[in-house]
Image (cartoon, rainbow, N blue to C red; front, side, top):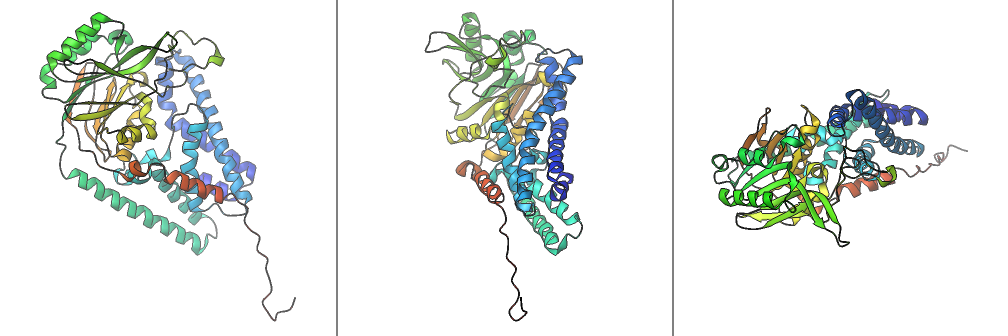
Length: 466
């Protein structure tokens, strides 16, 4: 609201400065709490150095984001038109994915729609429009309040606030009914077992640790067992002994296993490429692997322009194909870590026949706080209508239904933990069937609103003279 009020009345340079301050503040509140622990643990920064480095990263990213937003707001003012509730809602809906696509780190940060992740009735809008529609409602509500509170707001502005209130109320009522329908019956699908090895360091993440944690009594008649990202710190392709050991375990268990870990393959040029992978093994069958496609800048993909990466960083190659696997009548798609933030990947997996999304993570890098991928797992479940099983090491493992509810969740307390749950039934969503229709519509609204307003020639009424 303060930004919109400023943008409606202040000089262009003040509007631009307010947009910069807004973007930096949003990132500082939403990103800094998990970014600083990550710098210390993953990049092995000294705690005294992590804070200034993290602060610089947040400020620089916020300035880039804010410049994009401020430029749009200034251009709108120069058209001679008021900001408008609809135009502001469309602008934010476009600004968030546009900055993600154009600017590093190319992962969605601080989307306003995710602020409603715990407000399930409002989150259901994402099943129709994607998360952009939820952002639009949040911005529309703030824009309506900002207009209503401006001096001499007038009846038309109060009418705008009333119109937005009706839309928000209608969305909440519809979303509440959608959640209630999916709450009518508990999940009765196949069972899934998520194993958290609670390895505080790479040296603790051993094959024997996970074999011991995955007891046959806990697995029972599950359709799938999942080990998180980095569970296997050895390469099953190159370590024959580990391959035989794990294969024998899966055969004895009698349940398919999806395990995160190292992967490798020989490229067309004859060299060995290393990947961040998910390996899928079935009893008395071979192994299929999915290699992570969307790499985290600096952490997994080091820019060649910066020279050799520091010793703490081991870059990996990017995979090319989506991973959809099937066993015991269950087809699931695999995503690793921040890949769950990519809506296009989830839609593609669902269209390829996945009825469950398995997202493996290693949350030890985030310390005791909540990993940002957990919120996105809830968003993607609602958007796609497909449940998400989030298997993590050192964080919150959960099975999330298509309404965005965690039907089962657990966090290891310093020791390995096993979470077993029935898999909720998927539902069809308009967002998967139509794809990104809402965003292009918002873009058209934004572009149309940047055209200069036509000046109206005032003529005197007939009979009143010159």
